[in-house]
Image 1 (tube, rainbow, N blue to C red):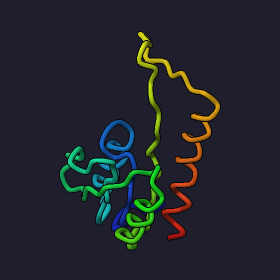
Image 2 (image 1 turned 90 degrees about the vertical axis):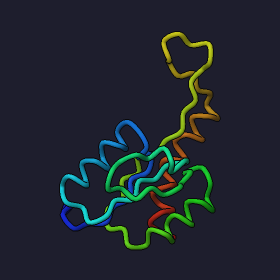
Image 3 (image 1 turned 120 degrees about the horizontal axis):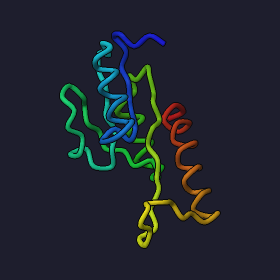
Length: 116
């Protein structure tokens, strides 16, 4: 994959792996990196372009796709998970319904961003 001079969008870019993707793309010479997060103020990566995107909201994903029409590299890193409040070990307790919501949000976001 050609990264130098590319224009990228990374979802879930405010922390963890998403943040590392943004930093790596910038270090590799990406021309522009949109750093997508529910709250763009949480994106503190120098050189990145923060953009609001909540992958669970179809209209917001569509708007993000319009705002980032110049993207050549898409990294769909965002996910949704809620930890059980009584868990001491931070393990996830997920019902089947919630699992479908989580996997659906992740898989359909990439499709929506490319098709809009």
